[in-house]
Length: 292
Image (cartoon, rainbow, N blue to C red; front, top):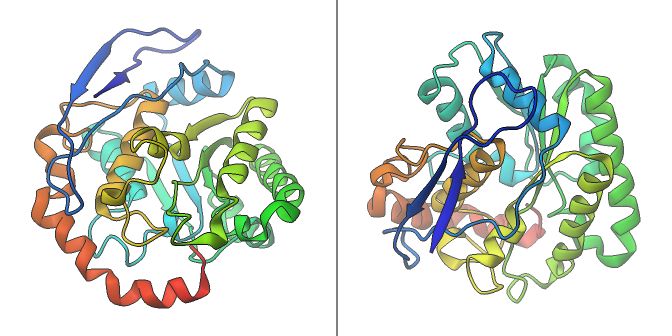
């Protein structure tokens, strides 16, 4: 299958598509040999925030990027020493794009929910004076099931309101899909992902839809080859999330290491296999809590 990558350049007054590059790769089993790239299912509308982000990326002013979320953003243990999607983002922006003055800050905390981010907002977001704040929450909130949906939607909305009040552009991400058969406590995660999509649509916020992409990539189930356990992405899953983020922000370059050239960024089969195996001792303790 194919992924369409869009690279946007030039100072953006209105969104202009200038290139479309198709990247083809072969399917892979768990263990991280080759990977299969699939396109996002629907065209993404251009928003004012898209234009703001892209024009800032085209400018010379250094940017501060803050990523906030739970253990999936935190990237702890499940990549077994390989890069998380936030670290791939830093590599793409600071090295491959040459924006060495940019700062990429990760304040993800294992186990966190929306209420935790609100309680620590000043320490985890505001104090850094961010230009862009990338938020991914919902995996842990979803264990509250249908009864927790309204509260989650309200708190997530308050987070994005505070981000704008801090002078930053919010970017919302849906969580990756999980193995709900093995982790029934997260059976309502799809509904929580829908709430993230709804908020993004209502408030005209840039959305990176990992949840949809993961399901589309594996016939409606979470791709086993991208998971460390029932919930958490492994090194391959984090790289896939990074590429989905790059594509949505218009900065994916399929010829670069982070974009998929020769599988360099994920270390090939040996690196991904090591990441899967080495994470197992720490996974058991986290599964007991049922939190990401």
